[in-house]
View 1 (cartoon, rainbow, N blue to C red):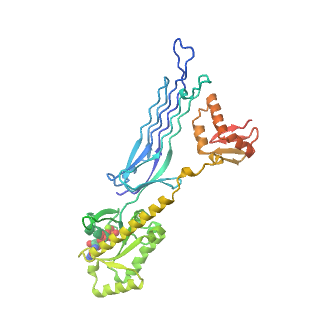
View 2 (cartoon, rainbow, N blue to C red; view 1 turned 30 degrees about the vertical axis):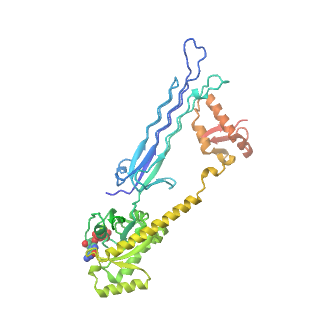
View 3 (cartoon, protein in one colour; view 1 turned 90 degrees about the horizontal axis):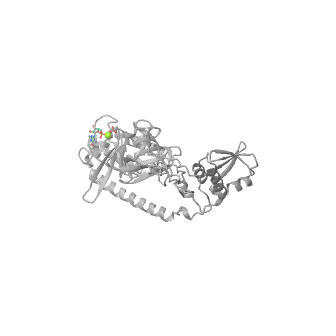
Length: 427
Ligand SMILES: Nc1nc2c(ncn2[C@@H]2O[C@H](COP(=O)(O)OP(=O)(O)OP(=O)(O)O)[C@@H](O)[C@H]2O)c(=O)[nH]1
Ligand SMILES: [Mg+2]
């Protein structure tokens, strides 16, 4: 079975804790701090490879974990970093955050890799906090948690031209004639249940990648038939080859419009894609029927091609047209890409406003302080350790949390929630 969608849970390794340790040696009266750092947690990396062609391995397994970093130890021994987990996926896999729906990465090239879930940071051991005017520091950082979230994997085929149309229109027959693909062909609908890819060589220099998409029917955009699953693949093809069977000559325009309508309903992007209309099985049409069909398309002001995969009629002309349109689309995409690159303003030129480092809001009498920096500080603090708590307060003070809370109207005894940890506010 061809699997083109999966939802999995990623859990990157936690960072190891920093260690609190004091050098104790005979004859050395006052030992120094020698707690080592915790190792960073292992990350989860996705790797696109043409050696894998489906997402089938994710059918049984849903949870993926990388190993945690090892805690630091005394004698300044740093903990080992956790081992990264590499997950191989087919080229064309798009990874999305399942909760927000935001695309994390589009693994559209063979060999492309991306860290999707980062391992937590190892905490620093107390050896790092020694200062000349301080006695032995009795605090160390805890390792932070690794990224954990659900992701959606979607495989979208990368082809130059997608062959679409009603079941039985002759799509698989066409791809088998023009390319190296050897799909199943039969005289019943829905013979093809998963897309086939095939490479067509026009000559030594020119080749086109075709995909043969399972039959679409009315309601496909609302998930009828094999529906959405396969409309998704079409999205990434540069050109659509819309096959309408010559078997119902009088209903040609009607049949064409039904599928056309599904594309429009599915997405405007798809509706705008270059479409080459093809009337298939021309060998069974007599001259009168062909004339009628030509007139019908003329009336609609639509260009089209007659072909017969059985006799090869019209195939060469069609392939030249597909090549021309694919090239046009590639040029258009290249210009678009260059334009985006020209207009791109790198993020670091945007000055971070001090107020934006954290947010404060009041709800049901509680003041909530949130923000990435805040959660980092909280996560790194060992809550049971008084010195660590003091350090945390200093850090919050330094970035202006207490000043901002006061301005916001916080009073003695009010409850504040700093990134999930509750405190009673006291001057
Ligand atoms: N006479 C004639 N028959 C054809 C031609 N092309 C395909 N057929 C026949 O049409 C039937 C359907 O062909 P397929 O290629 O399986 O059609 P499909 O569009 O892939 O169908 P699904 O996979 O079910 O969506 C088969 O019996 C083919 O032999 C052609 O050019 N001429
Ligand atoms: Mg087929």
